[in-house]
Length: 132
Picture 1 (cartoon, rainbow, N blue to C red):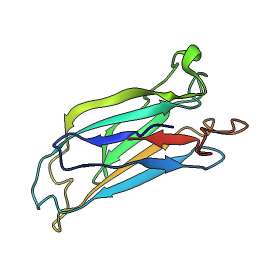
Picture 2: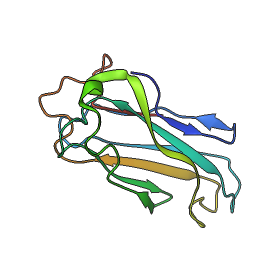
Picture 3: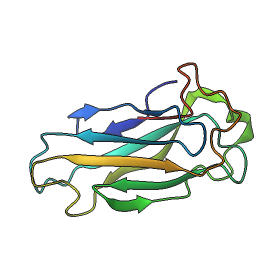
Picture 4: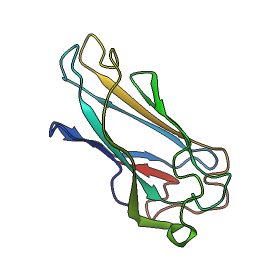
């Protein structure tokens, strides 16, 4: 699968991946941002297993603060099991105030509903969740 979590200020892009069987979750940490920074982020998720109404990204947190949830709810079933196609769920959003730690770290966490994964075999990497 292609990458999924993109930090749009040009500092870095990190791949966030999980091979969990049910309700995959992944987390990445960006470092050396500078305390008090207010970066903007874009997040894309591979269309691995989001075609059913019970399959969706349930929560995105940035620096421990909720950025949103219920993404890819009722995703296009023609894209199910198509990890080559990334869907943007967050588009150049400014992270909440205080999300960057005092040491300049920004932790981004992506959680899915318990129905994501399951009998689905995952992307070619074996991942059930891939984000960039």
